[in-house]
Length: 316
Image (cartoon, rainbow, N blue to C red):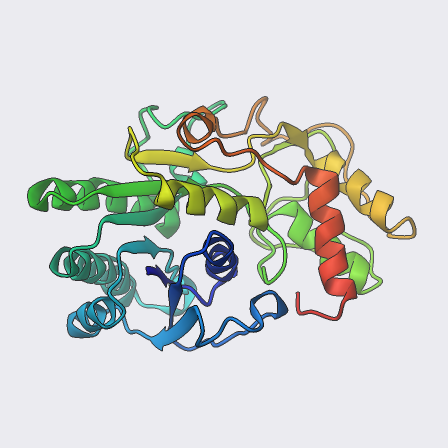
């Protein structure tokens, strides 16, 4: 049984589907949100279970692991940092990490996978980014700071207690159930489906240019990579980049959208933006070598599948 914390989130639900397709049972933790997307119909309370979990409660975490005889944990929880005070932010991240590790130790969990992020590479001038690069200690936002801290502190904990642990440096992921505007495909496709010019504006991201390199990865590929890593009989490293490994520029996603929806209105600024890197992709050589992962969705296939999902009447 695999436990996915943050399992009601965007990546969590798709990862649950990937494990179910591989023949495993899954328990997903929920805090406030309960979602039952169509791609999980018929699985609830059969091979897929949802359980309430406050990760600030150590006893609850231990109890959940023991109740379901959990053998693996994928820790994907991403707190809504903007709504928290600095002290609350620290507690929910660090105590949540501590409690899930302690629950894994007490429950004899075989492997714990902890979500890190491509954000840890911020400050490095050029990609492709590899797992063995030295990371800047300075962090420009909470995600960078906490993900770097997770990798350091959880590694120390695992060494102390003899636990197998891996870190998933997850790239820019898009697709069904993603409600943020943090990457270009998530700003293009919903705009087109609502009949408005795209991309939708984002306060968090500058206006994209056609030739800006991007490392956007479709969520089904992300979920497949996580499942392969967590289920591998043995692994040679602790840190893995999780992305599609496909070289693309922002204009590719506009082209993909218009290939699927010829009447869609979408335009980007020409050329490359002032913040655009020559190479922005993460190197997934390590992931591929140890799991055989291969992305199934390039820009055109990912956008088309996303549009199909929305045209079927599903939520964004």
